[in-house]
Length: 263
Image (cartoon, rainbow, N blue to C red):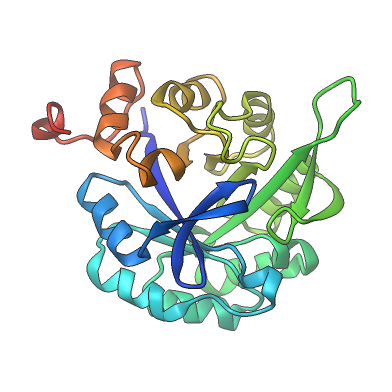
C-alpha cells in the first residue's frame, strides 16, 4: 500500500506565517523559512507554502521567500498564491518549488491547467480547490469559492474536480472552508465524494485538530495525504508524533525506525 503523506502548510501573509479561521482573524505564527526547516527536520513528507493574500491583493507570490526555503529545506515544496500564467509557474519552479498550486486563476482561466501540464508536466500542477457546503440540499453538495474563500463561483465542486483532472491536474489540494481552522475534523463526506470522482491524488485540508481526524480522512475519506497548520504551528502536535499515531491506527506512513520513540 502506498504511504500516506503528512504535509504541514505554511500560510504566508506579507512574509510571515499566519494562521486563522477560514483565512480570517490571522495570528502570526513565525518566519516561513525557520518553520519550513523545523518541519522538514521533524519528518514532513512535503511542505505547502501558500501566499494567502497574493491573489486577493493582485500581486505575485513571494519568490524571495520561496528561494530561501528551497536553499535550506530538502523535502518537496509546493507553492501557491498569485499563479496566473505559465511565466508565474516557471518563476516559482525556478526559485526552487517542486510543484505549484493554483486556485483562482485555474477557475478564471481554465486553460492555464492544460498549458501548465503541457509545459511542465502534470506532476507539477496542483489545483487547489476551496469549497463551502451548499446549505439546504438533500444530498451533500459543495460550491467552489475563490480569492481566499471570499468569492462564490457557482461551480459545483465535484464537477470542477472532474473537469480540472481532465485538463491535466496532477493533484488536488481540497480544502473545506467551513472546517478550516476549526480543529474539529475534515469534511469526510466531501473527501469520500471526491475520491469517487478523480483518480489523481487528493490532499485533505481544513479541520485537522488531532491525529484521529487525519486517520479518518485517510482511511475512511479516501484521501492520499493530509495537510495541517494550526496543530503544528502552535505546538499541539509534532509531525513525528502525528505519524506515530497514524501508524498505530493502521495508516501506512514514512517513519524511520529510530523515530518511533522520538518526539
